[in-house]
Structure formats: C-alpha cells, structure tokens
Image (cartoon, rainbow, N blue to C red; front, side, top):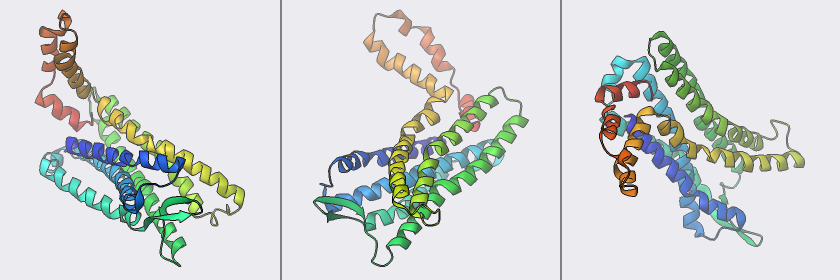
Length: 288
C-alpha cells in the first residue's frame, strides 16, 4: 500500500509541475496557448495540488495504521485497498479542481491576452472567497489536524516500544510534517489575507501591493515542495538507498568501469543479501 501511495504521489507531483513552464511563460509574456489549454492547464494545476496533499494525508494515515494499529493493518493495508483509496483520492482531487477548469478562460485585457478566473456576474467576490477557503481547509487545516493526531499517536507508540530504529522513524516523521507546513503555510496564509483584506484591515493600496508580491514569493517557495517529496519519502529510507546502490553497482557502474574489481565479487552479493521480506515489512511498519 505504501508503494502505491508513493507512486501516486510522484504522479501528482509530476502533474503539478507539468503546468509550471506554461505559467512561467505566461508570467513573462502573455497567454498564447488558447482557451482550451487555459482551462486544461488550470485544471491540471489544481488537480496536482489537491492530489499531492491528499496522498500525503493517505501516507500519514498509512503510517499511523502500520505503527499504532499493527494487527489491524495486516488486514487493512492490502494492494486492493491501496488501489481503491487511490482511485477515490483522484476522484476527490478532480472534483476539487473543477472550478479551476470551469471558470478559467482567455480574455484580452488591454493589449495582452490573459488566462484567469472569471466568475459569474454578481458572485465574483463570493466565489473567490469560497474557493480560497476551500483551498485553505483542504490544503492546510484538515491535513494539519490529521497529521498532528496521527504523528502524536505514532510517537507515543514508538517511545513505548523498544526498537533501535525508533529514533530514525521519529526523525523522519518530524521531517515529513515540518517540511510540508514550512513550505505551504506561508502561501495559504498570504492568499487568505489577500482575499479577505477587509476582515484583516488591509484594504489600502500599499497593503494590497505588498500582499500581491508576497503571494508570488510564497507560491514559488510552495512549489519547491513537490521537488523535495522524493527526498523525504524515498531517499531517507535506508532500504531504498541500498537498493539504489546495488542497482548502480550491478547495472550501471559495471558497464562504466568493467576493469574495476571492486564492482564484482561477493561484495555486491552481501549488499543485496541484506534485504529480506522480514526486514522490508519491518521498515514499512516504522515508516522507513
């Protein structure tokens, strides 16, 4: 189940960054890709955003079940359940991203073509506020509550059990939680303040300009998170590093340096023999 979620998280990150070159071109020039691409790329952007968050939550719940409810996890954490929940998450992400697909359209403003949301007449402010609140609730508050609960229970369980690798698991858990909120919280807060400027008494021109600049900076920082996911979910894992090292020695380095005896012999076999089904299950159970 963990591998299924990691695969889907990678797909969602790739989906998210797929649209970024187009938005970068648009920020530098104008929208030259037509109305259909405007809608599609807007939907793809939000689908990648929401699916990435949802799969991080699923991974959190998966770790929680594997550590806190280990007996129940033996029955619940199956490939079939992993596929079913992944499909369900993609459906939720697509539904959450539909407003971006529906409301974004191309329009000529002055001398430039723009790709921006255009809400129904008379409901522009309400729709904008609703969508920003939805983004903050689904992308910040709900994940925060779930992660705090799950990781608090995980840490309690790890501290009670006598396991030499529990400190690594606790460290990894803190990295996952802190990195996510470190990158996404500033953007979510700034967008919320910009949308509800009257409520925060920031409706003057100087405050609006500063918030617009803050949105650009914090959004760029938040987008970096999808590049860090492979590091915190894969490369931190001890077994993954051993697999990667073995793969490099066996299939890549052996062709690059055939005359190096260190690449042959029983050293490679000892590296690969450190992996057993029991150690794999143990690493999955503690989130490594």
